[in-house]
Length: 257
Ligand SMILES: Nc1ncnc2c1ncn2[C@@H]1O[C@H](COP(=O)(O)OP(=O)(O)OP(=O)(O)O)[C@@H](O)[C@H]1O
Ligand SMILES: [Mg+2]
Image (cartoon, rainbow, N blue to C red; front, side, top):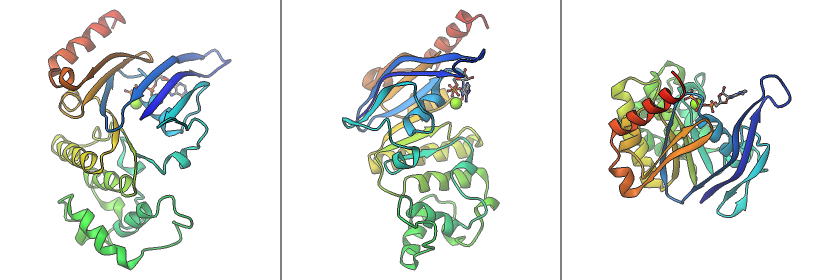
């Protein structure tokens, strides 16, 4: 279980650009939740993920993982139990290294001297097996540089790599946004498969309302640093894309757009 407790975050404190985004923000994520997060640009989705992953410091408040205060853990320390996939495939893979080297790198995440250990030959079969589930033929291209793959192929690898070591949380920030419609569907199906298989507690930010409605067991809508809609279980299942669009439209009317 992940708990965000009374989180406060103001950008550019003490400057003319000072902007309070989160004021006593609270959110409880149950173990095994697969949460889709939607919301207009600038509503605070990425900031919330950055706060969870430790890539952005909070002004006050606490983050609890299964009752343990993780607020002071650095990003690399949280990476031991949190995997993250970003919007851009380059963020999750190393383009100048081969597929094999990338897999080995992910496999050794968090281990001492992981970067210098090189590729353990015994693991190669395992990497091939993992890659073959992507159905992209990458298992036969182990020596190919990742930079020469397509965005979709790289994002599939990023997803595989981020979930290779045992994890509790998977954090996805618009991870299908840069992909063509067909590839985006493939990556979403793969995401769902991995989340179920590894029983990951997942937070997925997306602008794809259909994905948000279709996947996961809980749906959050954010607006100006607040959760303005929270649907779970049956309520979530019954939520239609049109309904979400209507809420978006009513918000922009309120904002005068
Ligand atoms: N590093 C920063 N410095 C100052 N303000 C920031 C910074 N990062 C984000 N903000 C501001 O915080 C607000 C929330 O931004 P955030 O990136 O979390 O939104 P988002 O919901 O992820 O939007 P999008 O859908 O466009 O990705 C915005 O008003 C943004 O301008
Ligand atoms: Mg964002």
